[in-house]
Amino acid sequence: MSLQLELHNEPLPLSAPFRISGYVFDAMPATVATLRDGDHVGRGEAAGVYYNDDRPEGMLATLESLRSRIEAGIDRATVNALLPPGGARNALDCALWELDARRSGVPVWKLAGLEGVRPLLTTFTVGADDPQVMAERAAAYAGARALKLKLTGEAELDGKRVRAVRRRCPDAWIGVDANQGYDASSLPKLLPVLVGENISLLEQPCRRGHEADLDGIERVLPFAADESILDLAELEARHHRFDVVNIKLDKCGGLSEGLRIARRARELGKQVMVGNMAGSSLAMAPAFVLGQFCDVVDLDGPVFLKEDRKPGVVYRDGYLECPGEVWGSP
Image 1 (cartoon, rainbow, N blue to C red):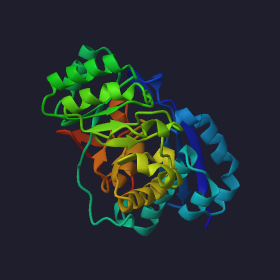
Image 2 (spheres, one colour):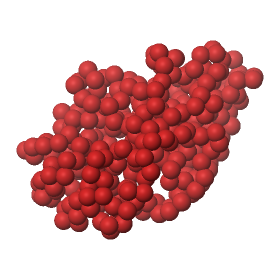
Image 3 (cartoon, rainbow, N blue to C red):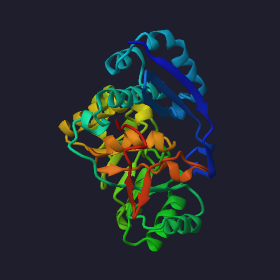
């Protein structure tokens, strides 16, 4: 078997700046890996993990350094052993999944053990801003049934944000994402507001590496690990402090590892969430397969881009659909 590897980076500019705790983004650049085996083609897109300095320029260099090894012939198990978790492995792993689908004539979802795929209820994210601005943005999501609010770690202001959105969207499922903004002293000030406003999920309340800050704090609503659990090894080490595990393919290094984490999280009695580091429909499509196994889905990355790929995923009445021609079909 002889493969041909193509690599390039794309800027993926956002339609408007996006703010979370500690960061403002104007674009979410990505690395795209394409594998060709005769008439068969597989593609994968990855944005990497910015807080680990895992960025497209480094991902591209990593994959380029392995070109001869990859083009000599490689499978997903070898990729998992060859590369650490992160964006480079994600792009290559997802490209191999689609290539295997094309070679076998079997869609990726079936290779992953599913009998079929269904539309997924997805959250739509509202970046941190003035409370009334956030409320207006939340209400502007036509048909949205689930929302995720970005917070900044300022308990009083974050409380106002939550209250403002809940007033405008009384019937929506709402989760909040603190993006590591809280600690042992500030988090208890926020929790009563979340409970009072019927918030369904608190994602990543504390800094990565400071999970002990959560000890002694009653989890009065489900706590989800994002930055705190990147891969399967960290799931084993840190799951006891969380109720939900947010799996992102860029964090764990691809659909293969994502599926393993989902299975193990279930065994540990955890709920499973799939998220994204932004990206185009090419990045959402493999995560859509993983989302079939999940309780909470946050796959809204393309709605923030100035321009998505065509064909692309479809957002309809709060649900995400991924036509076969987007990625992963024979």
